[in-house]
Image (cartoon, rainbow, N blue to C red; front, side, top):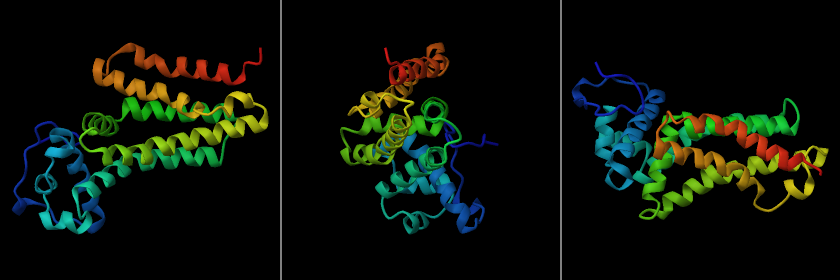
Length: 221
C-alpha cells in the first residue's frame, strides 16, 4: 500500500472505477494534494489537468468544476500551503503577546519553519525559481501572494517597535528594511535546495539571523 503524504515519489495511479466517493468538502484538498505532486514532478509547463485528476482519483470534469484553468489550480495550491501560516502570523501581529521584539522573533521562527521545514512550501518555491522565466505570471502571483504579504507583516512589526521605542525609528522605518529582515529565510530555502536538508548551518541560521537583526534595530551606540 503506498505511503500517505503530499509528496509521494513515484505514486501509482488508481483507476477511476476504484475511487472512493468523497463529500465535496473532502474533494478540494484531495485535488490540491494531487496537484502539488503533479507540479512538483512535471513542472508547471509539463503538468496536465488530466494527470491531476488521475492522481486524485476523480473525473477530469470535476477538477474543471472547481478550477477552470491550470493557473487557477496553481494559485489555489499556493494559497492552501501559505494561508494557515499567514493567518497565524497575522494573528500574532494583530494581537501581540509581548514586545515587538518578541513578535518579530516569532515571525522569523515561523518563516524558517516554512522555508526549511515544510516540504510543500519548498516544492512550490523550487517550482517558482525554475519556471519564473518561462511563466512570469506565476512569479508575479507568488511575489504578491507570499513575499508581499510577508513584507507587510514585518513592516507592521517594525513600525510598532519604532512607535514604542523598542526599535530605532531611523532603522525600523528605513526603506527596504522589511525585505532585508526576510532575505535570510529565502536564502535558507535556497541553501537547502542546493546542499540538502541535513546541512548543519541552516539549523543555526535562525538564531544568528535574530541576533544580527535585533542588534541593528536596538543598538544605540
